[in-house]
Amino acid sequence: THFGFRDVPARDKQKLVGQVFSSVAGNYDLMNDLMSLGIHRAWKRYYVATSQVRRGDRVLDLAGGTGDIAALLRPRVGATGSIVLGDINGDMLRVGRDRMLDRGYVDGFEYVQCNAEALPFPDASFDLVTMAFGLRNVTDKDAALREIRRVLKVGGQARVLEFSEVKPEWFRPVYDFHSFQVLPRLGRLFAGDEDSYRYLAESIRKHPPQDELKAMMEAAGLERCSYRNLSAGICAVHTGYRF
Ligand code: SAM
Image 1 (cartoon, rainbow, N blue to C red):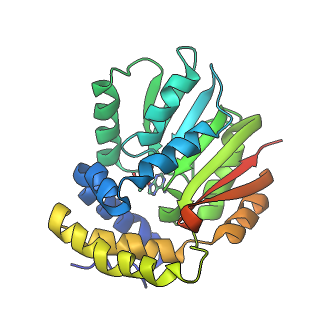
Image 2: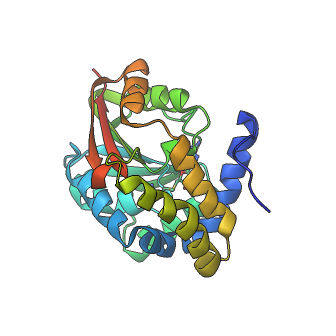
């Protein structure tokens, strides 16, 4: 069955995204390595290393999934800090929690099943909110960005890592071939699931490019918004602040 994302009404998108992530949860890490040739690890390391996180910070890793970002944040917030791993999908969250426990990370972690569009946290709760490869999947992205701003403390930083628009013209056909020919085949071979990986390629094309996302962050009330391209724009890190 094809998840058929192209024409679904907004209210059905969330259900379909749920099916995709429940389906990929078990193979998630292997597939990330295969699809990106391991480069996603470097993107994530850069993303965390250049955030303004400090010892003692309280951080929300939204759409935290299997916990890659949370694990990288852990040594930076130290024993006095805390990390909330928030994700809408119980299956992804369970894999994330198991992963943290395997690493011996117990104290300072919370796991909250939540929708980014309506966060169950009071205003001004966090020093940093990270959302890596998550915003793309959210139906009402403006609502999610407003919520991220709301739960930030004054001076807090919002950071979004997401696929974006590839910049060099010559690279686009290569990237399209990889997205629409290679990814679904990798999905079929290694995860027995072609449709989820077809969804991935489609969702990347539909996601707002760099400047549009920056404008959306500004419209949500975030300030000093900026972005930086990674790997020629395959990904971008967007940053904004609450003042
Ligand atoms: N941040 C992790 C990483 O970088 O590996 C996981 C990214 S994974 C591609 C996207 C995650 O977004 C999934 O775990 C999915 O369940 C979650 N997600 C999708 N829609 C969401 C929403 N509306 N609110 C919260 N999380 C959502």
